[in-house]
Image (cartoon, rainbow, N blue to C red; front, side, top):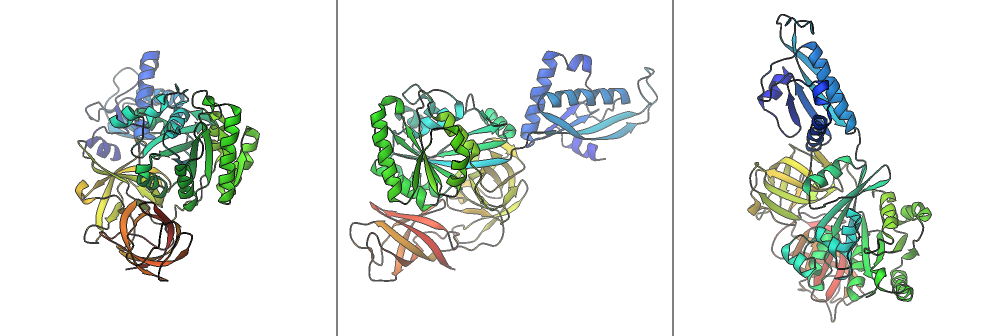
Length: 537
């Protein structure tokens, strides 16, 4: 019997045992609310599905209940489900005994157990990823904190605390690593988080939203440009959000971050922040700086003031034709509703989920307890992954790939059975220790080979002198950040503003790369962009 097999494993994340429920008792306000909270939790932990076994005691004994009590229990569960936006989609029953009627006239003499499947009626349809960029102290984290909470900032970056979670980040008011934020939409209305640091609240949001917007908040401090590049190059972003403070204007870092966004072909939104600190004349000056800069790089800037323009703008933005510019203030929340609605209308860009699963690892954790073990995180580049999948991880130090199994998957602390291209996920792996895993490794399906040498077409953005054979920049490709040697150039040397074909060799470790991938290379103040054209196995 299927029910007996489930009972043997006991209650777990989305499975609840109930002997019976009585309308007169369990639909009273206090009991109903308690049952509703319990059902919500089971549904969240089961990726939108909860399973109730009825006629089963808390200890897992198949006791069985009469037909009348069985039907009343189903009725109570249905009332609770409807109250939280869910519904009963299936009910299987079994007879556990053929006992005599108990004399109450409430049944047919049989004792029943049942398996009731309850599903959330609200299905998440879309998930877009937005990467922030911009100079330090221009208000990136504060803007995102205000967007995801709906709060007004206090003028000193109060809302940025929801993104800066390390003690030294909070103390200094400066982001030092990538951080993440999420909010969503349901029926066209914004769903804010009261406390974005609350994991259960994040999970509930992911479970209930029809559309999710995840922010990858990068670092604006110039010494940490490497981390900013990792956030833009290493994540499967749909759009870029360039932040420019009205009281400071366009800086060298602003130009550099815009160049990275455009090098990755990311459609970009520009938010002029801190407009509450300056007058209209100053805002106009900064806006002109931005318009001039965007036109230089071949983009069409467009000032956004009215919600009626957003539908046309969102369609053109997703194709990379225009760059909308919105004036905002996290203190007064001016422009934030407009930015909300633009993000709501932006379509998910066409990332392929048909290809085999692939994720470049960004962070590695060791989770104590609960058997989670090694957890890796990143954004899914292509394909789908399910709990229980057997995957390959690598390349390892020797160039081989190791077989691992997916124990569980989370999207912003929401436990799910599967995830697809564009989702930011944490994946618990079985069969590998954290010490064996490194940033830049790939988690994938299918056959993959370790690559150390590759050919690329490059363009040099800036270099003070000449680039020759033996030049050693750091290559940023996906989440890979590795020194690479220029082993061959198609000429004697190259200078800023020139393009050409080069052969590069990763200096220390092999990685999985393939034709068509774009990358950025840096060495001191020297910078360039490139694209892999051929890998040498």
